[in-house]
Image (cartoon, rainbow, N blue to C red; front, side, top):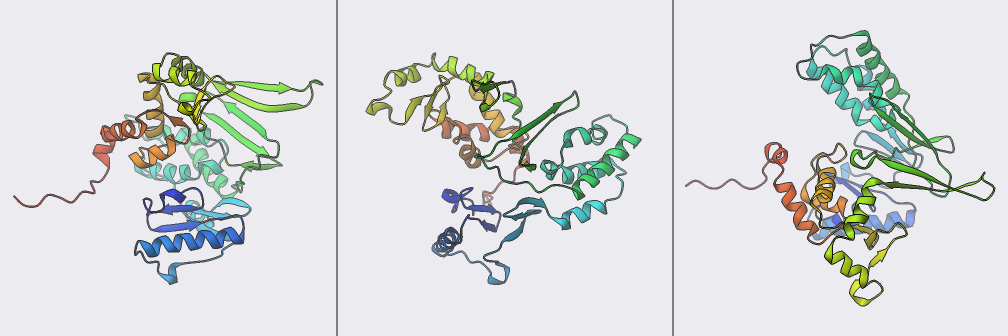
Length: 330
């Protein structure tokens, strides 16, 4: 399914195994998108059972969420199962509960701090002792899930309030717009050293654009100047031999808006590890990893190197199911 709908994924189609979700802004768009999806299914000789299909919905339940024009909310049916959850009595019970609650962590402000007593119970060689702190954490997570907010899509024409917090136990952040909580922007551990710059108006009262830069981008800029091929492209900017390449105001060379990653082993390792092994990525396959990384980065031989990296991942080799047919009998 992902392969046949690849050109439209995250544009107006979401696919999960054999579930297809089509979304749009207007009825006219929806009609066109629905036609495209049905034509693709017909061309590939794939069939959808009419009794399992729903059309022209204003609200839909999908993967444990309720999605509507108002935003994204937790499915009440899933919340009910959390409320009925008995106090964990083993490490496996704790992991199961934390796993379910963690699936909805974006709806729980301060999740990483609240869950600390429970995650500590799952550590190796840690005796299983259910403390008062564990009980408070357990009950608080259940309470937060039942009172979770509706996450709305951001309107970039409006202003935002950014709330950040940090301690030795966790990092927290939320973005608010017109008194509504916006879907959180994930912190990328590798790139979290940020400088926050405010462009002030002449009256020193009205604030302009919010600009965020990082040590990672600084390193990219330095390494680009040491890359022979990228230096050649810098000299060809504005000519037919460098169509699509441009030098940004931050001094970073980009190709069609994507950062040109120099041939530097450490930088590539950082990007590949973040794109494959981080908590945000959870060991993606080569196709999905390539689709994600190419939104931000470009380098010569990118697709091949990503494929080689995924194939060499020991965790994937041990955990992922082999889809190839077994060899016949000798």
